[in-house]
Length: 388
Image (cartoon, rainbow, N blue to C red):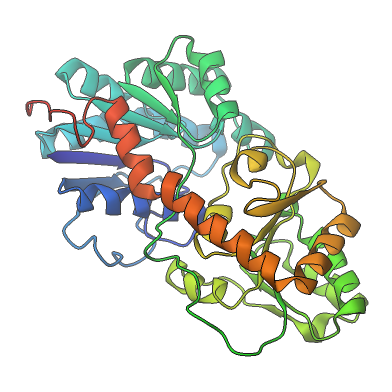
């Protein structure tokens, strides 16, 4: 089977270290692992081709030359037909798999007219995000692009129910599937065994306000009153890093904390295996639509997870089964659960075993992608459509 994978978003370096980059890479790995020949159409690679993807043929999409926001939007809209032409010229293809971006509906339109099954993967309400956090000059046009792309897709794979609701609010009766994120359970595995070590609390992610690392710093300071040897490991970088360092200095915890800064995705599994508990301390206003990759990676590593009871997290972390849910923004509650888990290594092991078993059953990337392909009529057990 030949697959055209399209990522026209200029903000996603497909082989980079962003969460979006990891998502692209993992989907590509599954497609290749299923025996597909994959052509990747993208604006930015952001790094070298990851292991296992050497056979993927990379096509670079047009770059941008306009600087002002409104002009960039017009330029991106105008390039949609160039993207369609590039895919059409590289074909024929049996499947088009596109990561939704703000300004391209032409690929889905071409797939429909050619009779090729097409997956449109929607990971966030990009129109709303762009308007709130950046600049959006042509909102109506952006909504029209989503509507056209969704209505032409064989299936619209949405990362969460709120994202699916948003797509339906724009595109009406689009063929929507809710499909949360997954994890590579071969790369993320529990530690085989560790000798004596300080109790280590961990966090992975971009240090942005909605990740709640300030709450984590306050909770860690409370933990150290009971366990002075406790250690905090924060993997990632971002605009919240200076504030986090200042909070740790003010509480006298800086010497017990390690902030790694940005690391390549390949380094994260080993870092997770040095943790005893992993955290996702999102605030209440973090938004309800996300499906955090890091939580699936925590669970696959066999770590007990303490997460905020907000957004999609209660559907991922089963309170008392493979992790613990706490009120968002509540440092005292987070500290209490850290202390309880520190005191009870047997409970940590039970939660960690259940975490690993749960993701193996339900949340592997292979399961995510094959369920999506099945919804488009090209699953493992479905006949592959004739090449167009």
